[in-house]
Length: 116
Image (cartoon, rainbow, N blue to C red):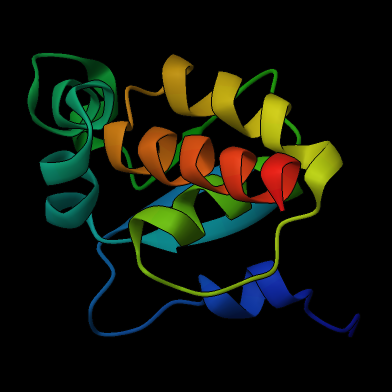
């Protein structure tokens, strides 16, 4: 069995997770309430009248697995170092998935890294 990446192990299935996001064939187990409280996108996805509301696994298309996991790490207060070159792509993901906490954190990181 292949070794899990740090992102897969960070988002491993637990008694606190109740949804699975699939990106590039890899699974990220998440808590719907937590993501919904941080994102209008995920609130609508999990609680709106869409087919995804009842799906056990939800495909997230057109994103890089590691980038998406890094943005979720910010939301879940999981520390994983973010390289300078990743900040702009992550800001775009934070915008796309309506994650203001991640966006603010990345903007602050951008200021610190470019001014420091």
